[in-house]
Image (cartoon, rainbow over all chains, first blue to last red; front, top):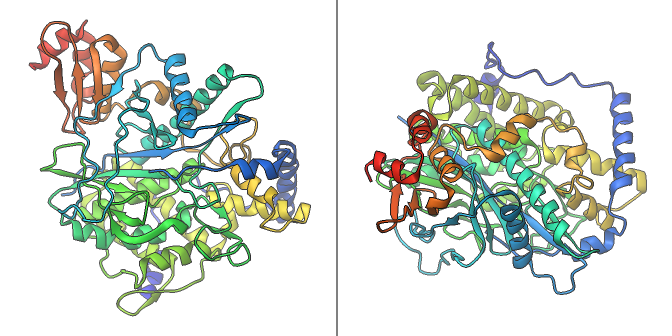
Length: 63
Length: 497
């Protein structure tokens, strides 16, 4: 089955695509800088007492 | 011909009452919903339990040792003007979106549900004593072995043998997690350590123990058999899906609902693949969740070995054939159907070639990139409490704390569409009738549920208006009538009830 699908899969792209293309991947350096900025921001908002927050986070099973 | 895939999504949210000595999650959940109802709605309309039968099994019997889900009729329960149900379920606030006619509409209502929870939380916190705080998470596990669900519901044709649905949907459910997973640090399956599973694709795979069954809280099954259509039971089933994660990414919610609706359309029409049954479904569900490079092969019953991606490509190819033959009418039309197919193909291609390129649209991939970066920066082990805190905070709905909304995830809805979905029902299903009646005649409605509404117009006994057809009571059917009727009494007269 796997082989059969391999042959089909890349011929199936439709021409009248409705979505914008996924933006081209930025250069590795840009991605790294972007991640650094994000991590700076996360350091700023992360719970100050992480250990206690995690310890107190107990939920009842649901559904 | 398949029936229209009317669909909805119901989410149980995690809740934490901070700095309250004898915190009780049931009363905390009630506070959240009451804050919304009292703060934002003119009048509370109760849910009506008359037609609820969650213990009925689609396989046509009530399993002897199966625990039928209980309905807790005494807890807070409200119906909103957008047609949604907002209530306390077990020990969680839960919101069920109104019935929708396509996946994009439903993803927008799911985002609106998040906003409703955020507003509820902010309102409730205004009422709490200094120092106390209610915190809501849109997740599915507390990291300590307790799980709560995000369930999807799809209308399916009653004439389709249930055994065929089980057989043909199961491989899809097991493999769709590669683009549906919300990601989680560690494992909550017995006997596994952080060293063995530092991070996995889904929140929920650890909690599934059966292939097929009625339960939702114990021995959870991959295919749930609850047979409670909330509609004409001679014509319809409602497939109740408990195997998904609650996603922060709108793109994922849209893809999850859209691809599943397409596959169920194929099953209705008997055009879905039938040769993909895994040899060990429960084990495979977990193996896929733990296989972050998507490289593992899994044995099928017929002896072949396939990857999760292979299985998804097989469903995708079958869906192309199905849509070429019957079109996309049952999933909401050509435009939406083609968009789902296009996104499905792109996501599978990206998973095959460049997983990290999906960090802007798939929760588990966004998380992995973020967590690896954080771990490296602070030299942490995966088992560090700060990593667990990060993993909770990804799902935190407090705007000043939540991570998911600050990492640049792509969206499929606009703020304006979400604002509209908070107040107004989808125009294309019976939710329109429910929501508009609540907005227009709040004092005359005693109760509402999915398939009926109960009116009190003063004189006679209470009057129940049945709504057994999910695609009736739409804007095009009843908008003019509702606009013309000044009172509920007039409406009932004109409806001839």
